[in-house]
Length: 280
Image (cartoon, rainbow, N blue to C red):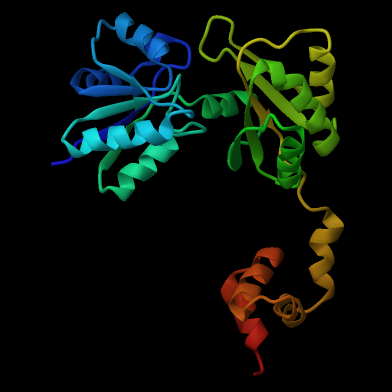
C-alpha cells in the first residue's frame, strides 16, 4: 500500500504560526523532505522533534523526486516543506505533486502561512481578483517580457522579489506600468520588523535610491485601469446582431461571440441570444 505525501505549510517568520496539524504530521512522518534541511532542522529542534531529513530542491528535484516516489510506493509517509510558507508555490514541490499524481500516490495539504496572501491583505489594494506572478526572471529581457504580458491585467498582481534585485525590478515596472501605479512593498512578514510600504512605483524608486532593500519582499501591484469609458460605450452605437457578427467575423463561434457580447454589454447571455436570433 502506498504512503501519502503531506504538503505542510511552515511559519514565514513567527514560529507561533505553526499549526497543531503540522506538528502532528512531523511527528508521524517517516521522512521530511525539505528545501533547506538546515532551516527545517532549526524548526524541528525548536519543537523538540527528531525525524530523518532529506533535501529536495530545484537542483536535485529530478533524481530526488524519483527517490521520494520510491519510498512512498513502499508505504512511507513523507512530509514536504519549503524554506518557509506553503510548499509547491514557486518552488519545486509543484513537480513532486505531479509525480505523485502520475503514480497514483495520495497527496494532501496542511494549510498555513502563505507570504503572498498575507501581503495582499495588508496592502490596501483590491483583493477580490488577483494574479500570482511569483518570481521575475533574473534575465533582464525575460523580466521585461513578463511585465509586458501583465501590464494591461486589471487584477492586483503579486510578485516575490529578492532584495538585491528590487531596484532593477522597480525600474522595469516603472518603464512598463508607469510610475503612478500603486504598489505595496511588504517584507519581514510576521517578524518583529514587519514592514508594509504603500506608495506609487515612483515613490518606491525614490525611497530605495536612499535606502538599501533588506529582507525578502512581496510586491503587491495595482492592476491596470479598466477600459476607458469611450471604449466601454462603443457597443451602444451598434446593434446586438452587429456586435455578435463582428466577433464571428474575427473567428469566434456564434456561441462564444454571443457570450462575449453579453459580457461587453453587461447583459444576460440569454437576452443577447434571443435578440441575435430574433426574426430568423
